[in-house]
Image 1 (cartoon, rainbow, N blue to C red):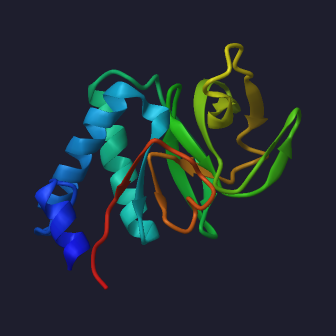
Image 2 (image 1 turned 180 degrees about the vertical axis):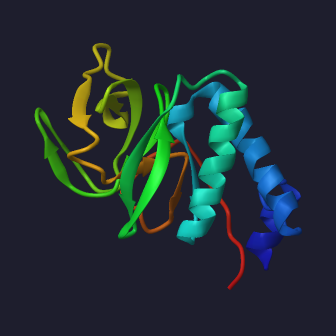
Length: 173
């Protein structure tokens, strides 16, 4: 109880109805991403929560004009085929280890899309975010579809990820 009280006093913990929690979470996330998007990740416990929060985050970034023109791809998320939109400046998370030409991506690794031409996705890894000459890599989204939006991830998927700002959405039992 001391830990909960400590975080409540610092406005780092919100105990409220679900819509108010999501609103507060996204408001805090918006403040952090104005600083640097690649240093911020929202964590949730269930895939459904992740999908909803990713959708809310993308909607906000679209309204701000941050994202480029989107293209739909069939992706494999948690063993299910889903149709998702992606564009330049979208955050993505890789869902499977794979050699993609010059780079081996890892399950749970984060990246940012640089551009999309037809089905070719050009991206930069977060691992290179502080390197002066950031390397860009590519994959064909019709041949490799194990990626998803990367604004929010499950706690399990985020193991091994380093970010400066982590926000946690915790609901239910």
